[in-house]
Length: 220
Figure (cartoon, rainbow, N blue to C red):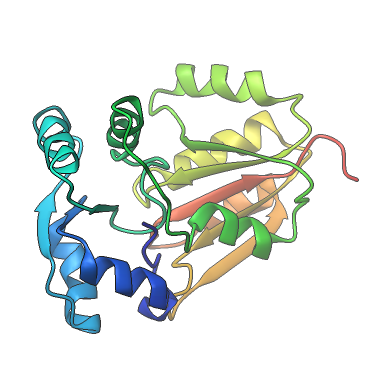
């Protein structure tokens, strides 16, 4: 089930109904999810499901499904399973023959793409790029000829370095970054990548989770 990426008003009535009716909700961070519980008066049992608990929790979830329970999976923000530890659980449930449905909602990648002004006829979502520069370089080189807008997630701690790397690999292309999406201080900037990287590097502080976008090699 998708959850808001910032503005709690983006949680759909259907999502609230399902979260209130299932037996258990598995959450990436229960402390984050409890904000929804407080805002929408939800009282369903919450349990942790993250990268550290995946191996232990999957058999438990499958056992509950076998017993007939309806369960929900949420991440801290956006769609679980997309750059998120929930993907192995979805795969395991399907492999075991259980029905899996998605309650759609906000996605930072698609929201940023739609608002960026970059081409939308095709896009490639790459999640988080490798931390090591050599591996990151190989990934970017492999995508250089792909005729699609490239989309990546990045933390505020590494975003300047990664954006500078994008500018070196694609100096002739435009790029965009989006941060604090749907929140009070939402910001979306689109510039030639070298200018965009220089602008962000010049800031005293860099806050918020980022979506980085790079236009295709050929403009439509």
